[in-house]
Image (cartoon, rainbow, N blue to C red; front, side, top):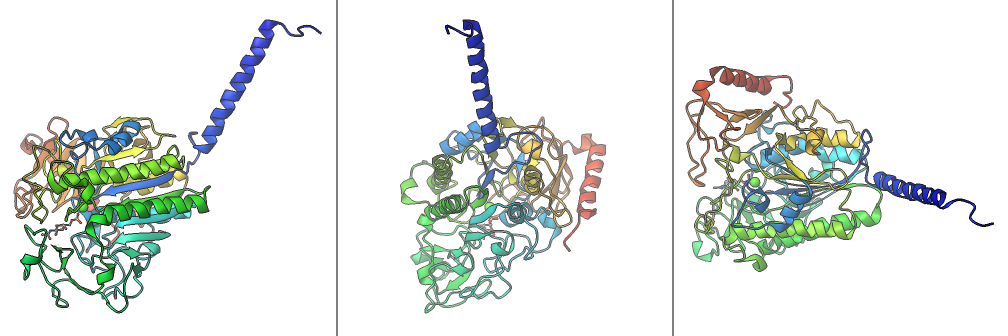
Length: 526
Ligand code: NG6
Ligand code: CA
């Protein structure tokens, strides 16, 4: 039998076969990386939460004096937000809001916590981690916690409970509070790591405990001197906030801290991948960089030309690269959502003489924004926010107003999970904005610093305040003014011209809106 089908027919067969193969492999990919509209997806989620990195600190946000190539890769391949926010201009309230979905100012005792504070989120309460855990995610937190641990009067030598394990995390490896606060030890799950029972640890704030040297009494022992505050127990040549004694073998080494956290973060991913490769994971990776004391590893020293603050930024960028490399190696990058953001705006001198001011070299940590950490101006809460998820998110830049407090409602929507609106009254579902499928984000956002401000679209209202213009120690412009302030950020991103007098109706409208949110329906905590 010669040619049963003609040449043309054979070509059509081939074409059909080709189309079948190609479309089936596309749908295979789609099943692997759920991109179909209407279907819940379950990407891995890696939330990289920087400490004190400002809007202008990364080269993808316009920094020129410093290069952050790993973060820039995330921005280039992902969605970079120009109006992304934490809720507060300091750490504890931002983290509280992000994890609970409740504005921190609704609850007393959520300001910057001392190192011996009890856990401020009620054990068993729904959190970002527990919502994901309920949906089958393996959950872990590595790095800075700063939401309190245990109950009042905690004995650091025993079981440290309650903590993240009571809030939906399967495992944790923590710096309890901040780098500049005692206790300067790591907590692994419910124990201080490496503690020698013969050398028990004791921690106290407000009153000295033990007889170890302090920055105030023994400045000659210091390798880094405080500029304001930070003159209590000396650990590794650096005086901290608070007093501790004992626990010598368990004390962290500041220069190794980024390495330790990266190692722990990678180990969480690797172990999880091995044990349950078909289940997604959520890693909350909260770096210490670039908070004070800035003591990056010696391989970064002098590399930025901007002193320890710039070197710590390079160390942060390195850490991001390490996480990305691991995801690449494990072939997880496609269906992992990597988020990079920060807990508050930038600060230059935050209490140590580390050359940050002298070596700034024209670098603008807040970029075009006014203020920074502690400030009511945009520099306080408008921070870098980048989301990278190749299977779903198209690269680009979004000007949509989004906030970390909305991760709960938005991720719940993404994975088809319900969440308890009563305990998370302030989280709003803005999933489409986070994944770049809509330009509709938040209509209203309360920003917390010394007082509350309100964003409505590109309007910004800062209510009257008798507070100081600048913070005495850090020299940050705080945005306090006895007159009400209104800024039109579309025309005036740097909040230089108060237009309240020109728009009295807008001021009244926004004051009422803010009051409504403050006292209204959503109120939960006393
Ligand atoms: C301040 C500290 C500052 C920093 C901040 C918390 C002094 C003088 N200043 O009280 O150094 O630790 O608290 O930073 O003690 S945060 O990023 O954790 O909010
Ligand atoms: Ca911070």
